[in-house]
Image (cartoon, rainbow, N blue to C red):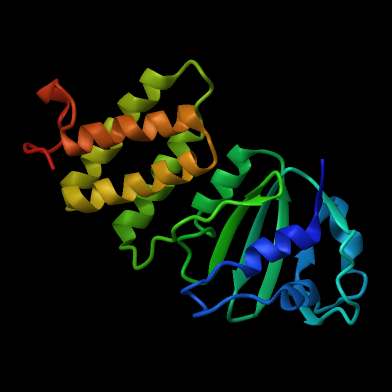
Length: 224
């Protein structure tokens, strides 16, 4: 479907971002934001540096309130050190989750801000910062595992997840840090309304926290 671009940019500009200690102005976003795929015609006014692909001269025109963009699922990414503003179109909520949780996603130290946009609405997510290498690896492994869910392999994936988390315990990751890391993943899936995948993460949280009747499934000896 088509969604009003001004509405999307106004929603972004209404958010206070601690990462930049302020807000984006709507005019700033329109001047510099880079579009892809069906919406790439909106880049015609930009002067784009090659080969980095980052605009070095923004738009001179004012934002037309009637402009619409095509697509139900987007991710707004801002990288401060370039600086780079990008509205990337994806095909599904699963693609959004994979993008946010990838190594280059919301936990990447060079990514300042990532915001999913679904059906023209901003869905703010909390960024997890100052990750240890073990926590980063755990996010990557759990995300890859959950992304394999096909509707029929819940038990198989939870068994693999149990083994995966046990390995991180043995490598020294604390119970609380493990819980917080997997809870971060679960919140991403919840935000994107990916209920089945959120349920898998919830199962892992039960194993970690001891919030489950069968003590044989507790990974740590004491509940949180």
